[in-house]
Length: 155
Image (cartoon, rainbow, N blue to C red; front, side):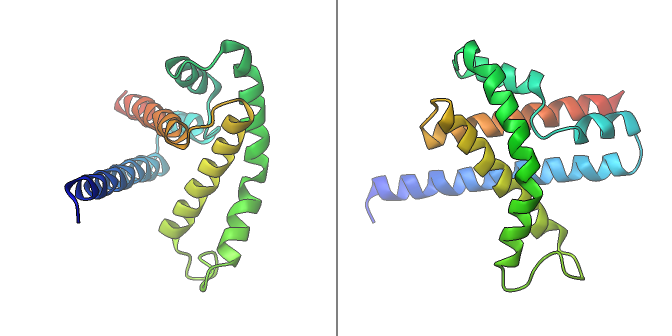
């Protein structure tokens, strides 16, 4: 294998590890929420795409402010389809993770995939075409949510 191929493979592994770490952090924070702290829980569960955070990330990625309202509305519409998409994905699996005993990690992964797909669809509709940029924006939103949740839990 060439050095360039090894480097890109290593970069891909690094990105995969980072995604897993993010998922674990959000999962741990979610579990901690379930143990108490109703105010933080309510804020965290309101929406995967809080408008204030989405707007902050859109600004960071130089998305024109004229697109923000349409993006936020479209993201909220996509959330209405989230459970349907997750159920469809689960039904295609050899063992449906919703059947007892439930596989919460698999369900979480399916929910994340559905969220990313919905987010990507909305962003493409609003002129963001680069897959890497879409993933970076999605991750930035999730990171900011996790940071705010952590701050809330520390109070």
